[in-house]
Length: 492
Image (cartoon, rainbow, N blue to C red):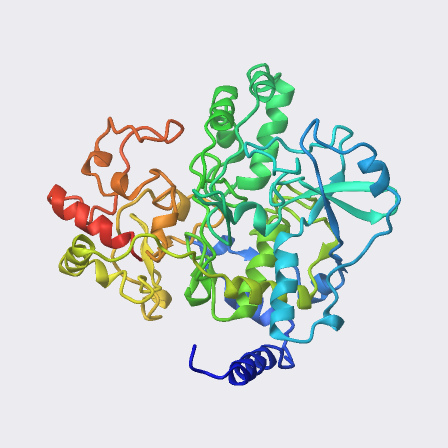
Protein backbone atom coordinates (compact mmCIF):
# COMPACT_ATOMS: atom_id res chain seq x y z
CA UNK A 1 0.00 0.00 0.00
CA UNK A 2 3.04 2.29 0.20
CA UNK A 3 2.46 3.50 -3.39
CA UNK A 4 -1.22 4.38 -2.83
CA UNK A 5 -1.83 8.06 -2.02
CA UNK A 6 -2.92 8.80 1.55
CA UNK A 7 -6.21 10.29 0.34
CA UNK A 8 -7.03 7.10 -1.53
CA UNK A 9 -6.28 5.00 1.55
CA UNK A 10 -8.53 7.25 3.64
CA UNK A 11 -11.30 6.94 1.07
CA UNK A 12 -11.06 3.13 1.13
CA UNK A 13 -11.23 3.08 4.93
CA UNK A 14 -14.20 5.47 5.03
CA UNK A 15 -16.04 3.41 2.41
CA UNK A 16 -15.48 0.21 4.43
CA UNK A 17 -16.66 1.88 7.63
CA UNK A 18 -19.75 3.22 5.89
CA UNK A 19 -20.54 -0.24 4.50
CA UNK A 20 -20.34 -1.79 7.97
CA UNK A 21 -22.64 0.89 9.34
CA UNK A 22 -25.41 0.39 6.76
CA UNK A 23 -28.88 0.40 8.33
CA UNK A 24 -30.05 -3.12 9.07
CA UNK A 25 -33.72 -4.08 9.12
CA UNK A 26 -34.10 -7.44 10.85
CA UNK A 27 -36.94 -9.76 9.89
CA UNK A 28 -37.84 -11.25 13.26
CA UNK A 29 -40.41 -14.03 13.15
CA UNK A 30 -42.67 -15.16 15.96
CA UNK A 31 -40.32 -17.87 17.19
CA UNK A 32 -42.68 -19.87 19.41
CA UNK A 33 -45.18 -20.65 16.66
CA UNK A 34 -47.36 -23.70 17.38
CA UNK A 35 -46.94 -25.22 13.92
CA UNK A 36 -43.17 -24.74 13.83
CA UNK A 37 -42.69 -25.94 17.41
CA UNK A 38 -44.32 -29.25 16.44
CA UNK A 39 -41.95 -29.63 13.49
CA UNK A 40 -38.57 -28.61 14.87
CA UNK A 41 -37.90 -31.57 17.18
CA UNK A 42 -37.11 -35.06 15.91
CA UNK A 43 -39.54 -37.64 17.41
CA UNK A 44 -38.16 -39.64 20.32
CA UNK A 45 -37.19 -43.29 19.89
CA UNK A 46 -40.57 -44.04 21.48
CA UNK A 47 -42.63 -41.36 19.71
CA UNK A 48 -45.52 -41.71 22.16
CA UNK A 49 -43.39 -39.76 24.65
CA UNK A 50 -42.16 -36.99 22.37
CA UNK A 51 -42.51 -33.71 24.31
CA UNK A 52 -45.59 -31.54 24.15
CA UNK A 53 -44.60 -27.96 24.90
CA UNK A 54 -46.71 -25.09 26.11
CA UNK A 55 -48.74 -23.37 23.42
CA UNK A 56 -47.75 -20.17 21.68
CA UNK A 57 -50.47 -18.31 23.57
CA UNK A 58 -49.17 -19.61 26.90
CA UNK A 59 -45.59 -18.79 25.99
CA UNK A 60 -46.24 -15.22 24.89
CA UNK A 61 -48.31 -14.62 28.01
CA UNK A 62 -45.08 -15.00 30.02
CA UNK A 63 -43.24 -11.86 31.10
CA UNK A 64 -40.23 -10.80 29.02
CA UNK A 65 -37.04 -11.00 31.07
CA UNK A 66 -35.06 -7.73 30.74
CA UNK A 67 -31.30 -7.86 30.55
CA UNK A 68 -29.73 -5.60 33.15
CA UNK A 69 -26.26 -4.16 33.49
CA UNK A 70 -24.08 -6.36 35.68
CA UNK A 71 -21.11 -5.75 37.96
CA UNK A 72 -18.18 -8.05 38.81
CA UNK A 73 -17.94 -10.22 41.89
CA UNK A 74 -14.54 -10.27 43.61
CA UNK A 75 -12.69 -13.29 44.92
CA UNK A 76 -12.62 -13.60 48.72
CA UNK A 77 -10.28 -11.02 50.22
CA UNK A 78 -10.00 -9.00 46.98
CA UNK A 79 -13.11 -6.83 47.14
CA UNK A 80 -12.48 -3.08 47.55
CA UNK A 81 -13.81 -1.56 50.75
CA UNK A 82 -17.40 -0.40 50.43
CA UNK A 83 -17.86 -1.99 47.00
CA UNK A 84 -21.16 -3.75 47.62
CA UNK A 85 -22.48 -0.84 49.64
CA UNK A 86 -21.81 1.38 46.63
CA UNK A 87 -23.58 -1.04 44.27
CA UNK A 88 -26.67 -0.87 46.44
CA UNK A 89 -26.93 2.86 45.73
CA UNK A 90 -27.16 2.31 41.97
CA UNK A 91 -30.33 2.32 39.92
CA UNK A 92 -31.23 -0.69 37.75
CA UNK A 93 -30.12 -0.22 34.14
CA UNK A 94 -31.55 -2.24 31.23
CA UNK A 95 -28.82 -2.71 28.60
CA UNK A 96 -30.68 -4.60 25.87
CA UNK A 97 -32.85 -2.15 23.96
CA UNK A 98 -33.78 -3.12 20.38
CA UNK A 99 -34.91 0.43 19.65
CA UNK A 100 -31.26 1.52 19.82
CA UNK A 101 -29.93 -1.13 17.41
CA UNK A 102 -29.22 0.30 13.96
CA UNK A 103 -26.74 -1.98 12.19
CA UNK A 104 -26.17 -5.71 11.99
CA UNK A 105 -23.06 -5.20 14.10
CA UNK A 106 -25.25 -3.56 16.76
CA UNK A 107 -27.53 -6.61 16.80
CA UNK A 108 -24.58 -9.00 17.05
CA UNK A 109 -23.12 -7.01 19.96
CA UNK A 110 -26.53 -7.08 21.65
CA UNK A 111 -26.65 -10.84 21.11
CA UNK A 112 -23.42 -11.14 23.07
CA UNK A 113 -25.25 -9.53 26.01
CA UNK A 114 -27.95 -12.19 25.75
CA UNK A 115 -25.31 -14.94 25.46
CA UNK A 116 -23.67 -13.76 28.69
CA UNK A 117 -26.83 -13.00 30.70
CA UNK A 118 -27.83 -15.30 33.56
CA UNK A 119 -31.54 -16.18 33.28
CA UNK A 120 -32.04 -17.65 36.79
CA UNK A 121 -31.25 -15.25 39.65
CA UNK A 122 -30.79 -15.64 43.42
CA UNK A 123 -30.06 -13.28 46.31
CA UNK A 124 -26.33 -12.58 46.45
CA UNK A 125 -24.64 -14.36 49.38
CA UNK A 126 -23.14 -12.25 52.12
CA UNK A 127 -19.61 -13.54 51.48
CA UNK A 128 -19.86 -12.44 47.85
CA UNK A 129 -19.12 -15.86 46.31
CA UNK A 130 -22.09 -17.84 45.07
CA UNK A 131 -20.34 -20.75 43.36
CA UNK A 132 -16.81 -22.08 43.92
CA UNK A 133 -14.66 -21.88 40.82
CA UNK A 134 -11.49 -23.74 39.83
CA UNK A 135 -10.38 -20.71 37.80
CA UNK A 136 -8.08 -18.10 39.31
CA UNK A 137 -9.39 -14.55 39.65
CA UNK A 138 -8.45 -11.88 37.15
CA UNK A 139 -5.48 -9.63 37.91
CA UNK A 140 -7.81 -7.08 39.54
CA UNK A 141 -9.32 -9.72 41.82
CA UNK A 142 -12.62 -10.09 39.96
CA UNK A 143 -13.94 -13.52 39.04
CA UNK A 144 -14.08 -14.58 35.36
CA UNK A 145 -17.31 -13.16 33.94
CA UNK A 146 -18.65 -16.46 32.58
CA UNK A 147 -18.45 -18.36 35.87
CA UNK A 148 -21.92 -18.84 37.44
CA UNK A 149 -22.57 -16.21 40.07
CA UNK A 150 -19.59 -14.07 39.02
CA UNK A 151 -21.64 -10.95 38.22
CA UNK A 152 -23.96 -8.91 40.41
CA UNK A 153 -27.32 -8.01 38.90
CA UNK A 154 -29.36 -5.05 40.10
CA UNK A 155 -33.04 -5.36 39.23
CA UNK A 156 -34.18 -3.41 42.29
CA UNK A 157 -32.19 -0.60 43.85
CA UNK A 158 -30.47 -1.79 47.02
CA UNK A 159 -30.81 -5.50 46.17
CA UNK A 160 -27.88 -7.50 44.80
CA UNK A 161 -28.50 -10.77 42.97
CA UNK A 162 -26.33 -13.31 41.20
CA UNK A 163 -27.33 -15.84 38.56
CA UNK A 164 -26.66 -19.06 36.71
CA UNK A 165 -27.38 -20.73 33.36
CA UNK A 166 -25.96 -18.27 30.83
CA UNK A 167 -24.96 -19.70 27.46
CA UNK A 168 -21.45 -18.41 28.16
CA UNK A 169 -21.20 -20.53 31.30
CA UNK A 170 -20.92 -23.76 29.30
CA UNK A 171 -19.67 -22.34 26.01
CA UNK A 172 -16.58 -20.32 26.91
CA UNK A 173 -13.24 -22.08 26.62
CA UNK A 174 -10.03 -21.07 28.34
CA UNK A 175 -7.30 -21.56 25.76
CA UNK A 176 -3.75 -22.66 26.62
CA UNK A 177 -2.50 -19.07 26.39
CA UNK A 178 -5.17 -17.89 28.84
CA UNK A 179 -7.36 -16.24 26.20
CA UNK A 180 -11.10 -16.93 26.10
CA UNK A 181 -12.86 -18.51 23.13
CA UNK A 182 -16.54 -17.62 23.07
CA UNK A 183 -18.96 -20.30 21.90
CA UNK A 184 -16.52 -23.18 22.21
CA UNK A 185 -16.85 -26.28 24.33
CA UNK A 186 -16.29 -25.24 27.94
CA UNK A 187 -12.97 -26.57 29.19
CA UNK A 188 -13.32 -26.14 32.94
CA UNK A 189 -15.11 -28.15 35.55
CA UNK A 190 -16.34 -27.40 39.04
CA UNK A 191 -14.72 -29.89 41.38
CA UNK A 192 -16.64 -30.54 44.55
CA UNK A 193 -15.18 -28.95 47.64
CA UNK A 194 -14.06 -31.03 50.58
CA UNK A 195 -17.14 -29.79 52.43
CA UNK A 196 -19.44 -30.90 49.62
CA UNK A 197 -17.85 -34.35 49.53
CA UNK A 198 -18.10 -34.70 53.29
CA UNK A 199 -21.78 -33.73 53.23
CA UNK A 200 -22.39 -36.25 50.47
CA UNK A 201 -20.67 -39.01 52.44
CA UNK A 202 -22.86 -38.25 55.43
CA UNK A 203 -26.18 -37.98 53.61
CA UNK A 204 -29.16 -38.93 55.69
CA UNK A 205 -31.89 -41.04 54.07
CA UNK A 206 -33.98 -37.86 53.80
CA UNK A 207 -31.13 -35.95 52.14
CA UNK A 208 -30.51 -38.79 49.69
CA UNK A 209 -34.21 -38.89 48.84
CA UNK A 210 -34.19 -35.15 48.04
CA UNK A 211 -31.14 -35.64 45.82
CA UNK A 212 -32.86 -38.52 44.04
CA UNK A 213 -36.00 -36.43 43.50
CA UNK A 214 -33.98 -33.56 42.00
CA UNK A 215 -32.15 -35.99 39.75
CA UNK A 216 -35.43 -37.55 38.63
CA UNK A 217 -36.81 -34.13 37.67
CA UNK A 218 -33.76 -33.45 35.51
CA UNK A 219 -33.13 -36.88 34.00
CA UNK A 220 -36.01 -39.25 34.74
CA UNK A 221 -37.78 -40.95 31.83
CA UNK A 222 -40.46 -43.27 33.28
CA UNK A 223 -41.17 -44.89 29.89
CA UNK A 224 -37.54 -46.09 29.94
CA UNK A 225 -37.06 -46.87 33.63
CA UNK A 226 -39.51 -46.71 36.55
CA UNK A 227 -38.82 -44.17 39.28
CA UNK A 228 -38.26 -46.86 41.93
CA UNK A 229 -35.61 -48.58 39.82
CA UNK A 230 -33.91 -45.24 39.10
CA UNK A 231 -33.75 -44.44 42.81
CA UNK A 232 -32.37 -47.90 43.56
CA UNK A 233 -29.48 -47.27 41.17
CA UNK A 234 -28.79 -43.77 42.49
CA UNK A 235 -27.39 -44.83 45.84
CA UNK A 236 -25.44 -42.65 48.23
CA UNK A 237 -22.17 -44.13 46.96
CA UNK A 238 -23.10 -43.53 43.33
CA UNK A 239 -24.16 -39.95 44.07
CA UNK A 240 -20.82 -39.37 45.80
CA UNK A 241 -18.96 -40.83 42.84
CA UNK A 242 -20.77 -38.51 40.43
CA UNK A 243 -19.92 -35.53 42.62
CA UNK A 244 -16.26 -36.50 42.87
CA UNK A 245 -15.61 -37.25 39.20
CA UNK A 246 -16.59 -34.09 37.34
CA UNK A 247 -14.35 -33.50 34.34
CA UNK A 248 -13.87 -30.70 31.84
CA UNK A 249 -16.08 -30.61 28.78
CA UNK A 250 -18.68 -33.05 30.12
CA UNK A 251 -21.98 -32.09 31.72
CA UNK A 252 -25.16 -34.04 32.58
CA UNK A 253 -27.56 -31.47 31.17
CA UNK A 254 -31.29 -31.83 31.81
CA UNK A 255 -32.91 -34.50 29.68
CA UNK A 256 -29.68 -36.46 29.28
CA UNK A 257 -28.27 -38.85 31.89
CA UNK A 258 -26.67 -38.51 35.28
CA UNK A 259 -25.18 -41.98 34.80
CA UNK A 260 -23.84 -41.35 31.27
CA UNK A 261 -23.39 -37.56 30.84
CA UNK A 262 -22.69 -36.16 27.37
CA UNK A 263 -19.94 -33.82 26.30
CA UNK A 264 -20.58 -30.11 25.85
CA UNK A 265 -20.73 -29.20 22.15
CA UNK A 266 -18.96 -26.30 20.51
CA UNK A 267 -21.28 -23.67 18.99
CA UNK A 268 -18.65 -22.39 16.58
CA UNK A 269 -19.81 -23.23 13.07
CA UNK A 270 -23.28 -24.27 14.24
CA UNK A 271 -24.83 -22.18 11.46
CA UNK A 272 -23.93 -25.00 9.05
CA UNK A 273 -25.30 -27.87 11.17
CA UNK A 274 -28.66 -29.46 10.32
CA UNK A 275 -29.22 -30.99 13.76
CA UNK A 276 -28.49 -29.84 17.31
CA UNK A 277 -27.45 -31.92 20.32
CA UNK A 278 -25.67 -35.26 20.25
CA UNK A 279 -28.92 -37.12 19.59
CA UNK A 280 -29.97 -34.63 16.93
CA UNK A 281 -33.24 -34.03 18.72
CA UNK A 282 -33.62 -30.48 17.37
CA UNK A 283 -33.67 -29.69 13.68
CA UNK A 284 -31.74 -26.61 12.60
CA UNK A 285 -33.18 -25.17 9.41
CA UNK A 286 -32.71 -21.49 10.19
CA UNK A 287 -32.22 -18.95 12.98
CA UNK A 288 -35.77 -19.60 14.22
CA UNK A 289 -34.91 -23.21 15.06
CA UNK A 290 -31.81 -22.04 16.92
CA UNK A 291 -34.05 -19.68 18.91
CA UNK A 292 -36.47 -22.52 19.72
CA UNK A 293 -33.54 -24.66 20.85
CA UNK A 294 -32.41 -21.89 23.20
CA UNK A 295 -35.94 -21.56 24.58
CA UNK A 296 -36.25 -25.27 25.37
CA UNK A 297 -32.70 -25.56 26.71
CA UNK A 298 -33.27 -22.74 29.19
CA UNK A 299 -35.89 -24.71 31.08
CA UNK A 300 -38.99 -24.99 28.90
CA UNK A 301 -38.29 -28.68 28.33
CA UNK A 302 -38.64 -29.50 32.04
CA UNK A 303 -42.10 -27.90 31.89
CA UNK A 304 -43.09 -30.01 28.87
CA UNK A 305 -45.25 -33.13 29.02
CA UNK A 306 -43.79 -36.45 27.89
CA UNK A 307 -46.91 -38.56 27.62
CA UNK A 308 -48.51 -38.01 31.02
CA UNK A 309 -45.17 -37.19 32.68
CA UNK A 310 -44.21 -33.58 33.41
CA UNK A 311 -40.74 -33.33 35.00
CA UNK A 312 -41.52 -30.13 36.91
CA UNK A 313 -43.88 -27.19 37.10
CA UNK A 314 -41.19 -25.13 38.88
CA UNK A 315 -37.71 -23.82 38.16
CA UNK A 316 -34.97 -26.43 38.00
CA UNK A 317 -31.19 -26.29 38.02
CA UNK A 318 -31.16 -25.54 34.27
CA UNK A 319 -34.16 -23.24 34.13
CA UNK A 320 -34.78 -19.61 33.53
CA UNK A 321 -36.82 -17.76 36.11
CA UNK A 322 -40.27 -19.37 36.01
CA UNK A 323 -42.91 -17.12 34.49
CA UNK A 324 -40.41 -15.32 32.25
CA UNK A 325 -39.18 -15.69 28.69
CA UNK A 326 -36.80 -14.20 26.17
CA UNK A 327 -38.20 -11.60 23.82
CA UNK A 328 -38.11 -12.50 20.14
CA UNK A 329 -35.69 -9.59 19.65
CA UNK A 330 -33.34 -11.03 22.27
CA UNK A 331 -33.44 -14.44 20.61
CA UNK A 332 -32.81 -13.00 17.17
CA UNK A 333 -29.79 -11.08 18.43
CA UNK A 334 -28.53 -14.20 20.23
CA UNK A 335 -28.78 -16.20 17.00
CA UNK A 336 -26.88 -13.58 15.02
CA UNK A 337 -24.14 -13.54 17.65
CA UNK A 338 -23.80 -17.34 17.68
CA UNK A 339 -23.72 -17.39 13.88
CA UNK A 340 -20.92 -14.80 13.95
CA UNK A 341 -18.59 -16.85 16.16
CA UNK A 342 -15.28 -17.82 14.56
CA UNK A 343 -12.59 -20.34 15.46
CA UNK A 344 -9.21 -19.07 16.60
CA UNK A 345 -6.15 -19.20 14.34
CA UNK A 346 -5.03 -22.81 14.07
CA UNK A 347 -1.40 -23.30 15.09
CA UNK A 348 -1.35 -26.72 13.35
CA UNK A 349 -0.37 -25.76 9.83
CA UNK A 350 -0.35 -28.29 6.96
CA UNK A 351 2.83 -30.31 6.68
CA UNK A 352 4.13 -33.32 4.84
CA UNK A 353 2.82 -35.51 7.65
CA UNK A 354 -0.65 -33.95 7.64
CA UNK A 355 -0.91 -34.14 3.85
CA UNK A 356 -0.19 -37.85 4.06
CA UNK A 357 -2.81 -38.04 6.78
CA UNK A 358 -5.35 -36.39 4.46
CA UNK A 359 -4.77 -39.15 1.91
CA UNK A 360 -5.28 -41.76 4.62
CA UNK A 361 -8.48 -39.94 5.66
CA UNK A 362 -9.83 -40.42 2.13
CA UNK A 363 -8.49 -43.95 1.68
CA UNK A 364 -10.07 -45.13 4.95
CA UNK A 365 -13.47 -43.81 3.88
CA UNK A 366 -13.64 -41.16 6.61
CA UNK A 367 -14.86 -38.65 4.05
CA UNK A 368 -18.03 -40.67 3.58
CA UNK A 369 -19.39 -39.40 6.90
CA UNK A 370 -17.10 -36.39 7.28
CA UNK A 371 -16.77 -34.79 3.84
CA UNK A 372 -15.05 -31.44 3.31
CA UNK A 373 -15.57 -28.56 3.77
CA UNK A 374 -17.81 -29.03 6.83
CA UNK A 375 -16.32 -32.43 7.67
CA UNK A 376 -19.79 -33.76 8.44
CA UNK A 377 -22.48 -35.03 6.12
CA UNK A 378 -25.04 -33.47 8.50
CA UNK A 379 -26.91 -36.77 8.81
CA UNK A 380 -28.17 -38.89 11.68
CA UNK A 381 -26.82 -42.36 12.34
CA UNK A 382 -28.93 -44.92 14.26
CA UNK A 383 -27.76 -46.10 17.65
CA UNK A 384 -27.01 -49.78 18.03
CA UNK A 385 -30.29 -51.65 18.46
CA UNK A 386 -32.53 -48.93 17.03
CA UNK A 387 -34.79 -49.59 14.05
CA UNK A 388 -35.15 -46.53 11.85
CA UNK A 389 -38.84 -45.60 11.40
CA UNK A 390 -40.15 -45.82 7.84
CA UNK A 391 -40.95 -42.11 7.72
CA UNK A 392 -37.30 -41.28 8.52
CA UNK A 393 -35.82 -43.71 6.00
CA UNK A 394 -36.82 -41.62 3.02
CA UNK A 395 -36.07 -38.25 4.57
CA UNK A 396 -32.51 -38.02 3.27
CA UNK A 397 -31.38 -37.23 6.82
CA UNK A 398 -30.41 -40.74 7.90
CA UNK A 399 -27.17 -42.59 7.28
CA UNK A 400 -28.31 -46.17 7.77
CA UNK A 401 -25.06 -47.27 9.40
CA UNK A 402 -24.54 -47.55 13.15
CA UNK A 403 -21.08 -46.80 14.51
CA UNK A 404 -21.74 -48.89 17.62
CA UNK A 405 -21.05 -46.39 20.38
CA UNK A 406 -22.86 -46.58 23.71
CA UNK A 407 -26.62 -46.30 22.98
CA UNK A 408 -27.71 -44.98 26.40
CA UNK A 409 -28.07 -41.33 25.41
CA UNK A 410 -29.96 -42.20 22.21
CA UNK A 411 -32.28 -44.86 23.61
CA UNK A 412 -32.64 -44.40 27.36
CA UNK A 413 -33.00 -40.67 27.99
CA UNK A 414 -35.52 -37.89 27.60
CA UNK A 415 -33.64 -36.65 24.52
CA UNK A 416 -33.26 -40.11 23.06
CA UNK A 417 -34.26 -40.03 19.39
CA UNK A 418 -32.63 -43.38 18.59
CA UNK A 419 -30.01 -41.46 16.61
CA UNK A 420 -26.70 -39.72 17.01
CA UNK A 421 -25.78 -36.88 14.70
CA UNK A 422 -22.59 -37.19 12.66
CA UNK A 423 -20.36 -34.52 14.25
CA UNK A 424 -18.15 -32.10 12.40
CA UNK A 425 -14.41 -32.63 12.73
CA UNK A 426 -13.67 -28.95 12.28
CA UNK A 427 -11.97 -27.53 15.34
CA UNK A 428 -11.07 -30.87 16.94
CA UNK A 429 -7.65 -29.42 17.67
CA UNK A 430 -9.08 -27.12 20.37
CA UNK A 431 -11.63 -29.57 21.81
CA UNK A 432 -11.49 -32.37 24.36
CA UNK A 433 -13.97 -34.97 25.65
CA UNK A 434 -14.29 -37.02 22.46
CA UNK A 435 -17.21 -39.26 21.66
CA UNK A 436 -20.72 -38.13 22.53
CA UNK A 437 -20.01 -39.27 26.10
CA UNK A 438 -16.70 -37.41 26.32
CA UNK A 439 -14.94 -40.63 27.26
CA UNK A 440 -11.40 -39.62 26.28
CA UNK A 441 -9.69 -36.25 26.14
CA UNK A 442 -7.41 -36.55 23.10
CA UNK A 443 -7.51 -37.72 19.51
CA UNK A 444 -4.60 -39.99 20.33
CA UNK A 445 -6.74 -41.86 22.86
CA UNK A 446 -9.79 -41.90 20.59
CA UNK A 447 -7.81 -43.56 17.81
CA UNK A 448 -5.97 -45.93 20.17
CA UNK A 449 -7.22 -49.53 19.78
CA UNK A 450 -6.55 -50.01 23.49
CA UNK A 451 -9.77 -48.14 24.28
CA UNK A 452 -11.75 -51.21 23.15
CA UNK A 453 -10.27 -53.32 25.93
CA UNK A 454 -12.10 -53.99 29.18
CA UNK A 455 -9.05 -52.84 31.16
CA UNK A 456 -8.75 -49.48 29.38
CA UNK A 457 -7.86 -46.59 31.69
CA UNK A 458 -8.13 -43.06 30.22
CA UNK A 459 -5.45 -40.51 30.95
CA UNK A 460 -7.99 -38.26 32.65
CA UNK A 461 -8.17 -39.69 36.20
CA UNK A 462 -11.88 -38.80 36.38
CA UNK A 463 -12.73 -40.47 33.09
CA UNK A 464 -14.76 -43.70 33.10
CA UNK A 465 -12.76 -46.92 33.29
CA UNK A 466 -13.36 -49.82 30.94
CA UNK A 467 -13.92 -50.31 27.24
CA UNK A 468 -15.04 -47.41 25.06
CA UNK A 469 -16.80 -49.32 22.27
CA UNK A 470 -17.84 -48.21 18.83
CA UNK A 471 -16.50 -46.03 16.02
CA UNK A 472 -13.66 -48.42 15.23
CA UNK A 473 -12.66 -46.53 12.09
CA UNK A 474 -8.94 -45.84 12.10
CA UNK A 475 -8.14 -48.18 14.98
CA UNK A 476 -6.44 -50.75 12.73
CA UNK A 477 -4.00 -48.29 11.21
CA UNK A 478 -0.27 -48.74 11.65
CA UNK A 479 1.12 -46.35 14.29
CA UNK A 480 2.83 -44.11 11.73
CA UNK A 481 -0.35 -43.88 9.63
CA UNK A 482 -2.38 -43.12 12.73
CA UNK A 483 0.02 -40.31 13.62
CA UNK A 484 -0.37 -38.88 10.11
CA UNK A 485 -4.18 -39.05 10.32
CA UNK A 486 -4.15 -37.25 13.67
CA UNK A 487 -1.82 -34.59 12.26
CA UNK A 488 -4.33 -33.95 9.47
CA UNK A 489 -7.33 -33.84 11.80
CA UNK A 490 -5.58 -31.22 13.91
CA UNK A 491 -5.30 -28.92 10.91
CA UNK A 492 -9.08 -28.76 10.43
